[in-house]
Length: 164
Image (tube, rainbow, N blue to C red; front, top):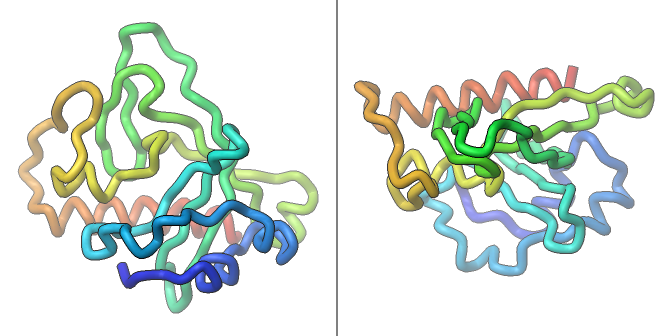
């Protein structure tokens, strides 16, 4: 992914108003992000524990979505899997991220959700730059490029549902 500016990020949001996009907390460390290792930019809002944001290239444009965060409620020792990158995490490492739909459907309160890595670091897990709390990802026969393509396909399908 190419390096993004704060203005790029704010202009990308499809499921919130321009005012909401102007007020959201953009990461302060954009210059320090490992852009070459990121397939999308994802972060949690430090001032609002129930909000996360995701920005990626989708189709012909940069697309951002505001997400509501809800931690998965599963058994204490049970693991959960991210639906984007298929990384398994112990309790708390995967959360339900729901996005208000874009346009009139979203204004009517419709939303879509997907279980994702709570820290939205899927790209780093795929590349082995970050290790899940459980210690490792499971072995796959797919190459890194194929895993990235699968993750981006899963993300694209989610964004299509948000924008539909």
